[in-house]
Length: 297
Length: 266
Image 1 (cartoon, each protein chain N blue to C red):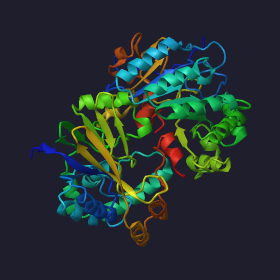
Image 2: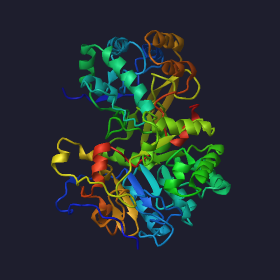
Image 3: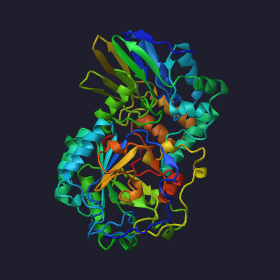
Image 4: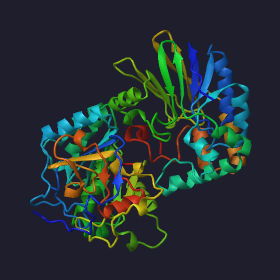
């Protein structure tokens, strides 16, 4: 088992608390931390060997989707690891899309013409929007592949092309990991938008995420949140106030901290996790400071 | 003053004026021909268009029953942004231009009027209990797009709000969902700008208790070229006037789900 670097954390008992206001977003860590890539900045140290969070079985996922639908969930996200490694990804996506709009977070490297056809057919017959978030950390092949591994850029760009040709509009998702390697003033959104236009994408969609100091990325020096840090701040805007993650081993407070003991809120039902969350981890500081969300928007 | 629970048989409802007084005038004339007992507005009077102050006399003189949108709330409380919650700097750039212009051109009296609007309205339409909100019953700036609003969420929101019919706006695109339990959710659309379909008309909604609920989306033509010319004269971004002239959205596209985005040009 890969050990995650453990940053300074407060014990859950001392940490400030975020309320639970109702389930808006269900995250399904469908493949656990099983991935065909091994990106240098991966928040949960996913990789091809011995995933420290195991993939989920279809029955567990189906149960979570049913529970979430009953709780009035607004959207569902499949993440991992790499979701397209799961042998039942398509029937599970179909099931999710019958309940709510569903997004897959993917590195794009496993989306060939056949999968792109299947996804287009699924999107066409689904009641709600199917969203595909394709990760690309830099528009430059060399810079991207230094982070994500040799060949990752080419395959992701090809996936964007295959999806675009079938009328799907993937959201290209980048972290700020190589931001400082570009001249000051060259905005990331503009750079990615220009790149996608040049690839023939008429309706470019881009999402930028901060880099978190956990998983394979060294932890920053930031201490965990205190009550003082949160004075006058509306904690209900934090994503742990209305999101839950189903992963092997339980239900967790947010996608960043899935699999970590301190963020586990239930070892059983989804509903049992509908309770306040301790903001115990340094990653909680990033959410507080940046207002970031792992959702599409 | 406590909100009075009105009882109606047939009403007209619209959202998102976005300072489009031309469309509002056209709507008020059109609604008069449709035998409606009252006209309701679900908020966001300003933003996007020119001369925001021209909208308020029309709303008030014609007795339009309004609620507050996120834009109205921001203007009334002196916020520095529209509360739309964009992250893309391009969207924020255009949203900031629009908000600054609207803030500077909305009189103090009208800001006070916006601040006094209720956030929700309840009424009876025949046997149906109706709740009017701007974004959703729970959050003023929540986007309820057709392809991203599941039935489970609608059941949940409407059960909590104790209503049979939920009317909202905020996204700029109309839709109607009849749920299996005879409840209805309707996004009434907006009259401030066309709905990203390459047509220049805008839309409003007529609801009738017959006694089953009937929902009719009404296309509304207006002098959109005159509006676009005024936007140009006021120095508003040419991208805004392009939307009015072509029917395609050009800015603030990041929140659109895949299906709605795929229907547009940009």
